[in-house]
Image (cartoon, rainbow, N blue to C red):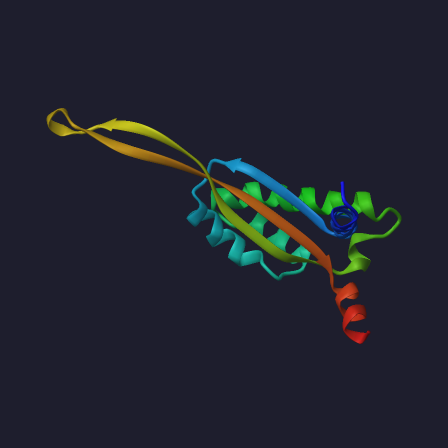
Length: 139
């Protein structure tokens, strides 16, 4: 491995250490429905986002609530001894990408068949601390 490649790999590892995220893959909900729920919590504080997801009636909000709790647990694993309430965590970004599409057939009249496309998605949720942003702006 060349020196330049090694240096960029080390930089990516350093960036990953300070990034707090959780990824949900192959969630059996269409990406369009999931994006409706993710737009509700994007940019919100963690506790407020959990409340929004808990009282939302959409099925996708249950899966997203578990994903947010997983991201918080990932943050706690990297920051031992720091309380979540004092860190001012917020949902920085939420990406919803299309996943695997299962193709099925549904019977139709006169010997025909309609194609059903059962969509799935991948969700990436990234947390960040508001305190860190204020420190970076002051520099």
